[in-house]
Amino acid sequence: MAVEWSKQAADERERLFRELDAKNPQAADRQDDAIGTLAGSLDGVASYQRLPDGTHFVPVKGYPVVLLYDRDPATGNATVLDLAPTRSDWKSTA
Image 1: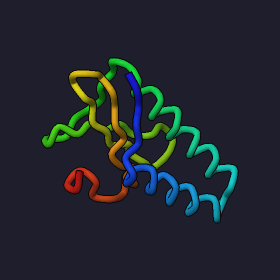
Image 2: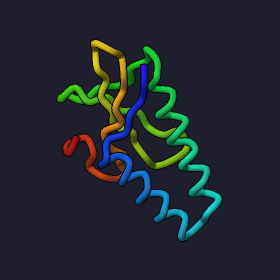
Image 3: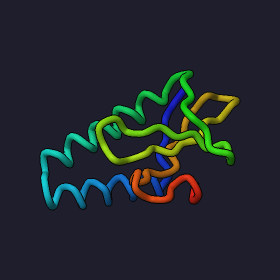
Image 4: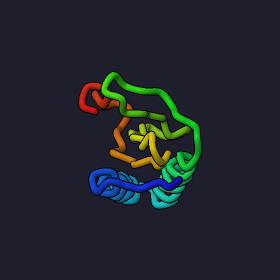
């Protein structure tokens, strides 16, 4: 099993990093590490909560970010689709 990042998710991860890095570089590093660790944990059998459209989601513990992903049922591979600020209306846009 593997974890891949969509272009949209990779771009959003970079945007979140740059935005926080401008204010607090150490916090940006910690948040990015937490996102990467969580994404890496998707390389297994665990599936988190689902939205009505079938997209899985899991909050990034300790940070105001939700990771949205899909899993290929045939291979078990996960694709990170996007990252969304928890304060946004991410459930209706996923």
